[in-house]
Image 1 (cartoon, rainbow over the protein chains, first blue to last red):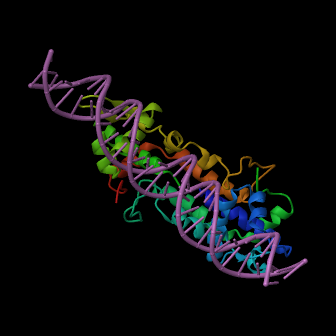
Image 2 (cartoon, each protein chain N blue to C red):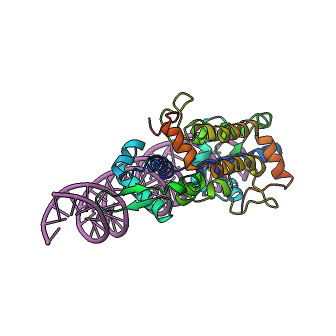
Image 3 (tube, helix red, strand yellow):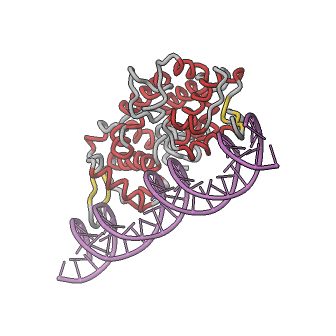
Length: 144
Length: 144
DNA sequence: TACAAATAGGATAAATTTATCCGAAATAAA
DNA sequence: TTTATTTCGGATAAATTTATCCTATTTGTA
């Protein structure tokens, strides 16, 4: 569904949010360990998220990644997915047609519309706070 | 959402079904032209679909691809997707966790469940006949 | 039988995604 | 100021997906 990069990006964001809540800045090493991802590849994704102003990066000793506490609630899953994979997953045609719209639909246009809308709603209505709290309370997991 | 191979596979199946309805066997060349796909790559996918007994291939002069008329109605989109991409798209974890289940869910497990179920239902309830008829009546399109 | 038309299938190449490596730059603390 | 720590960013490599090429095989028809 999502690219590996996007999966790592979402998991990393949740882990950063969870720690930022407790005032802790986390390092790349920590993140990669906690979400079970390749370190160097994760670094690229974090850079990308930082450039998109979804997370903050702090260089140097005692540096790492964090998210402003006040922003955690307003960051939607859709922003993360958009930053990494773009919006084709819920905007593009399911069969890859260049032009796929009501007046010129692909064979599965109507059937897909429901799924795509559901996905879009889900991504746009889920925020980092909810996800981080579930990790904190131990009802959801970032790895295995 | 789907791989290119799967997109081509679905479109090709619809085109073959549509022609099989009229008793016409279609060639690889025809198919690739009508669904706007690379010929040699499409050939591999058709071989795959034939090996999965979703379509029939006939070698030699006047050969080509076809689907038994009586089968067209019972072939579900899910079978085609399964044959090419496998079932991870609606069975696997949205964040790539190896183990993601009710007792050990990933952070977006619940949110994803809805989308995945919707996708699964859609793929399992849509058959080639419906899709082929819409192409025939000109309300849907296989390319552009 | 010879020929032409098609698919089958192996080998290979191109493109994209995923992953690694390493030196540069920044920064806090000693 | 020096040092240790940590992210940044460019180069490169590995893996996967997408795409191409060429020969073999099958089959209908003249």
